[in-house]
Length: 177
Image (spheres, rainbow, N blue to C red):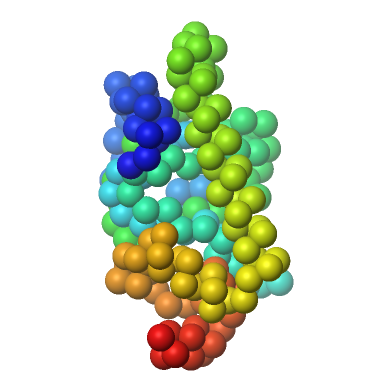
């Protein structure tokens, strides 16, 4: 776990509710409102959106990561994407009302939460720039470097979708290694 997640987790630890969910369970559903802030204790998740009838994966989440649908959690709007479990998962969650109360009453927590949000923003910024500048093969190599367990834990068709290529193209990239 990194320092920002460590600090935020410790500040929120006593307020979490535990949820155990099976693989292929939708946690956040595109078009619906989500009123929880989550911490992934165990398992693998994927973020995806539906485009022209196809699921497009844009994110994988592994243990010790926070997540929520910001537009839904913060602005009470419908989520722009779905998040589902790839494996059985153990989640910790905090209801929106409780989280907002905690953030209003604790400046240290608010600072840690803001640092977490900035970290996520930078992560998405890097992802967007890589999508524009890098070829799928380079994005695949960077994904393996940042999350080597992805090969054992994520089905190939999700990885291919994440890279914006077909499963056949991904097989070719993997065979070139």
